[in-house]
Image (cartoon, rainbow over all chains, first blue to last red; front, side, top):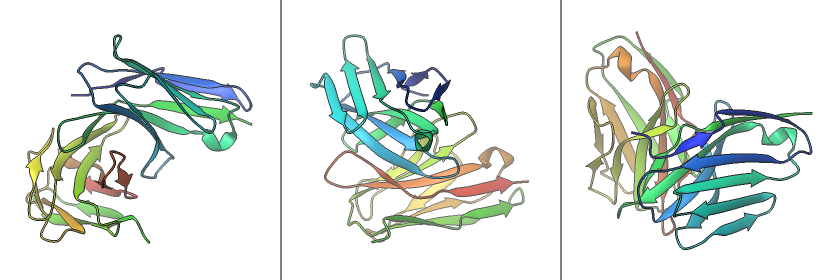
Length: 111
Length: 111
């Protein structure tokens, strides 16, 4: 079963705007990660936030984590056409670092 | 440094045929994973390995077998393919940190 559920399922914005994607999960986690998948390609790791962190930044990416609400958000600022992709949250737990993925948000950035 | 590679990239099987998907990583990672991705869904874990000679079941292991005879290779086998196994298969590996590195995927169609 999917641990994470992303919202919205699809998002279309203009270049230069900010994009916000949300992820909710069900069980306790060690960390939460965000991945990007370009059409027809494998997933690429974007950012990891640990369960004891509340916010993390990496370039134009900002991730927040609220463990009391079991939710996370990914903000992409000043979006570009090249940001067009599917974005997945994944929660990690267990000794083998197994990831449980959400169903993803399809982001389209219009030039 | 190729990262994670998968062979083949595409394959069409008839129901009942068998095949093996090969995953190779050159990052000396201990952990390796096989996922499947179906349209509109996130990735689901099939099997994983925490080191050479070890394998374990993931979320959707039925109909698949795996082997990790060498640290750098993780093989996924389908003994008797079924149409329900039509999917895109991704291999991933991880090392000292939690982030996973993905291969480009294998698109499998079972007719």
